[in-house]
Length: 200
Image (cartoon, rainbow, N blue to C red; front, side, top):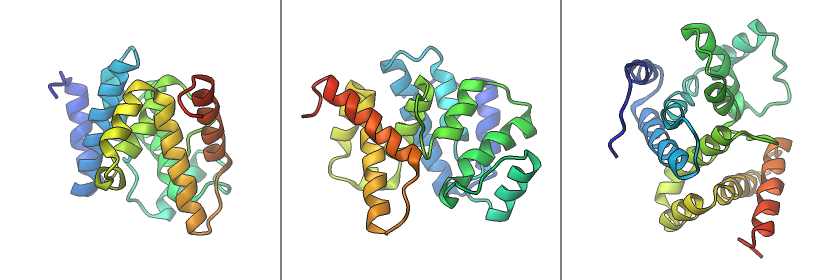
């Protein structure tokens, strides 16, 4: 895919590369490309911002729990009800603003929501949420990957249903609690698909 990357995006790409492992960075590149493509298909006005959100979404993914908690404490952010595996989405939201004086609200909100999702997500939040799943090793290894991508291109709610349902299934199998945001995304996306006769 030929994406007209700006100097800003190239600079952020180099910064992200220095924060995470090669395999995690490869994931970020896949997510960025998927987000860019889905933003065009689903009429998001700023596809390069979607690409940038993909590049930056895991910026603090491989930091320690103490690192995340220090960020939360600095910003007086209540994190106690968050699952640990979602810490990075919220810490990245703060760190990217602090370190780069970054102010693009759509991108920041998408980064914050990409793991748990939430009710009433904006378009870029939805795009990054589903791109994160489709760009995962789990999705790539699945025999259903091509169909998942094609169905998400047709209907973004399908991708939201897919990620939230797979997350719920995984957490149930591991006997782990399910965050209310994930349940909200699942219910919202299923209702949208039923209303559109996309599932019965």
